[in-house]
Amino acid sequence: MPQSSDRNQAINGFIRGLAGHDGATAVDWAAEITQPAMREAAMVRAGKQFYRQDQQGATAWFQSSGLSAKAWEQVTGSR
Image (cartoon, rainbow, N blue to C red; front, top):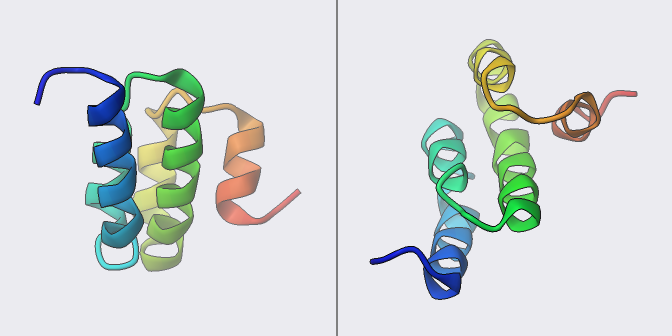
């Protein structure tokens, strides 16, 4: 599917279901969203699930994700 708003919406919907089973793959898919605000929200949402499933893996992913410290707080639920 070519890059478009429809593709972004499709990926966003896909990762909603995927994140609960495979957070690592969900964060990879979330990074494919081209609209910045939607991408960040999707990465945080998927990152939360990934963190619940594998804290060490999620920490490594986050360090290369380009997300802000505030986003990490949202992922981990810490302040």
